[in-house]
Amino acid sequence: MIRSKTYREFWPRYLDEHRRRATRILHVTGSGLGLVLLAGAVAAADWRLAVAALVCGYAFAWIGHALVEHNRPATFSHPWWSFISDFRMLFTWLAGRLPASSD
Image (tube, rainbow, N blue to C red; front, side, top):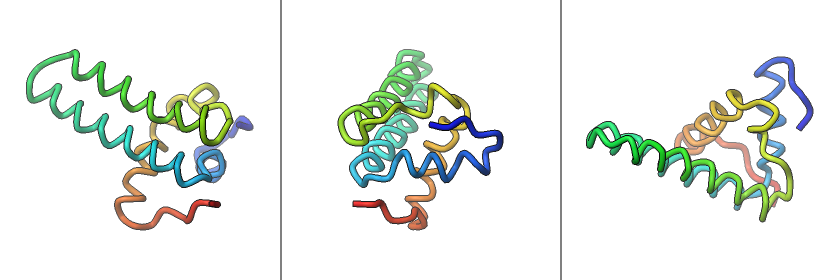
């Protein structure tokens, strides 16, 4: 991914790196399960669930990049913006406003 100077520049590039439907489904699934596990970690006061939340979120996303998009995750060039964008994509999808995928 090209290094963006602002988040406004980053978001369209992020979507372009996640253009296939399967990649988006994997990201949304990983982010959603990660939130559920994080809530469980707080409710049960169990740090292991918090670790599982991170592993789950990133595993689904990286599988999408490796097996579907065949590109490098944005996490490596923009870790915070990528993390924020994973959840932005999840909530945009839940609201029914995520632009169509290219496949």
